[in-house]
Amino acid sequence: MSRVTTMRVGGLTVHALEAGHQRLDGGAMFGVVPKPLWERRIAPDFRNRILLAMRPLLIEHGDGLVLVDSGMGNKETDKFKEIYGVENAGASGRTMLEDALAELGHAPADITIVLSTHLHFDHAGGNTYIPADDAEGRAIPAFPNARHIAHQREYEYATHGNERTQASYLAHNWEPLQASGQLELINGPAGTIVPGVRVMVTPGHTPWHLVVLIEDQGEALLYPADTVPTAHHLPLPWIMGYDVEPIRTLNSKRALYQRGIAEGWRVVFEHDAETVGGRLEEGERGVALGEPVAAPHPEG
Ligand SMILES: [Zn+2]
Image 1 (cartoon, helix red, strand yellow):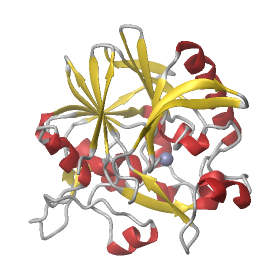
Image 2 (cartoon, protein in one colour; image 1 turned 90 degrees about the vertical axis):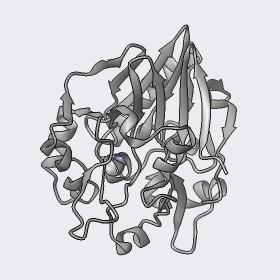
Image 3 (cartoon, helix red, strand yellow; image 1 turned 60 degrees about the horizontal axis):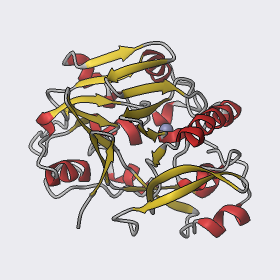
C-alpha cells in the first residue's frame, strides 16, 4: 500500500506524500457555493463533513531534500482528532508522513528544508512532534536537521490571531523551532528557496499564504496549497469559507490560471482525497484539469 506518487519536473524528482486524512464541514469548504451543487461532486458524511487528504510534497534537489508542508503531526488530543476526523497515525508511532518518507528510504533527519505554505495546523502541524516516550508531552522539532522556512508576515498573522483566526494557529507547531534556532522567516512577494523552487504570495486564504512553483528544463509544477485545495475548487468562485479575504483568493486564482494554462503547468492538490493532481488546461467554462492522477488512498 504505497503512500507515494512520484513525478518528474524536468530533471527534478517530486513526490506527493499521503500524510493522512481529515474531515471538514462541506459548507465551510465551499463557501458561498450551495450544497445542492457541491454535494453532487463530493458526498458529505452524516455530520456534513467531506473527506480531505493531507498531501505534502517532497522535492529531491541537488541542494538537499525539500519538504513542503507537513500535515497535522501527532500532538493533538483525541477530542480534536474526533472533531476534525483526523486519521494520520503512522506505523512507527509518528505519522503517515514519516511512513511515506520511509517508503522512499528517508528518515526525518535527512530533510534539509521544510517550507510551510502557511502555519495552519493541517499544514505546519507535522513540523514538531511529541516523542512516544516523553511523559510530559513536550513538542520537539520533527525534522532535527532542517531549516524551516515560513513567511514573516504569515508568522506575524499567526502569532497575532483574533477570535476568527486563532483556532487554526497552534503555537506548539512553531515555538519549538524558534527555541532550536531552526525557524527562518522570509519576506517579500516572492522568493527562491533553492534553484528551481520558488514561492509566491497568493493572498486570500490567509493574507500572506504561499504557493510553490517548481520549474526545471521548461517544465513546471504548481503546489497551490489552500489557494486551490482540491480539484473541486478549480472553478474561480469555488472558494473556501475559511478564507479570510475571499475576493483576494479569487484574484490569486485568476492570476495563477492565466500563467498556468498558458505555460502548461501541472498541479498537485494538497487536500483532494481522490485526485493527486493533473495539468491546468483551458476548459469550456474556465480552467479544466487534464491528465488527472488518482490518489493511492482515496478511501480514507
Ligand atoms: Zn489553511
